[in-house]
Length: 451
Image 1: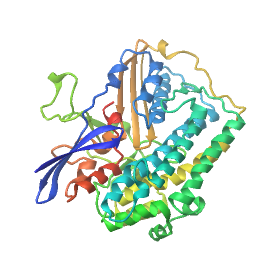
Image 2: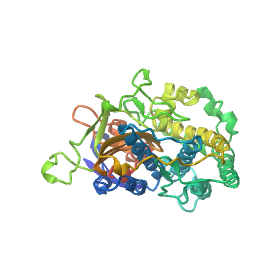
Image 3: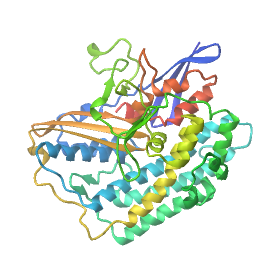
Image 4: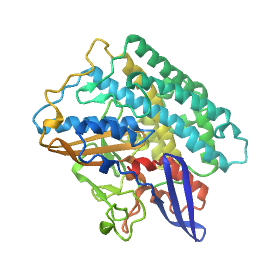
């Protein structure tokens, strides 16, 4: 028997196609069918045009695409033996913008994507989480909408901002602007403490044992209780291999496959299009069933995302949860919401470090249009995981643009020899509702995947 479910309430749409045997999912694949073509659109464009195009790949993680683009462009300068200079202020404003975007996304994801599906597993009254009308849903939506205004202060708008350019940012916030941004963060912190986790933020950040989960209250406790009631602490497990491509103020790069290795070699990343549609049908495999490629590091599939970041960075609380419950739905969601706490705390402190008297932008000595040939590559930790942008320019124009998104890492097709991350997590399950929750635990983004 085969079932086909349209996965909505994501960025775009996807199909979850499951084959059943003896009431268990024997095979699963995620089909991404809405091609967009940004990589092709960018060909023969001026390099700086990418700063306008790529933030529009996604309405949720446009900041991540912008930051990846600008850093890839800056790395092209190095092929011409020139190092782009950035002030501390510019670096912080870029990181703060990305962090605020992730904070906004984490809140929306929990209340608008995870909990509406979780409450379907229970006969209890969880109507406060119902989309569009539930009290908790509306409260979270309001908080997220207020928080993202902090990004609009430095970005000029949200989504699809383009305030990062080679050499810095075109943003010069005043002390009043920074104070206002801090106030928006304070509002989100108050929400975390009073509505979401029911515990003081700094006390939460000191959690270091599995039993600290018992201190959690409010909305996050509802999720935890629903997980244990429905065995989701044991379901949704995949290969338990994790990768993070980027070092930042909050995250460490590395991979974990039974042991932790902090050195990442980007040359070992391999894309595969055996099951991927091609705009040139003469080059398309007969096995193709969607627009997503698959990607491996070396010979293996690796999960990326907030859980992976927690494991690689050795955050104590989630590391202990992971030791006990492995890479289950419970652990994956807790990893993401644990990251929310750290982002709130660190971003508030980063705003305080901005020196308004420092320059926001240092103009490079020459234009990218003057570089006859060059290659740039960058990685950024986006909301859903590691994002990679690679640009080749020739005669001052973009010759080739390649993007590998977190959803490609997590939900791309597997091969005959090995299941992909999401396939492994879903196969063997006995419930389509749980299969959908497992899929959502990776946070599906169709538009990024079919860029």
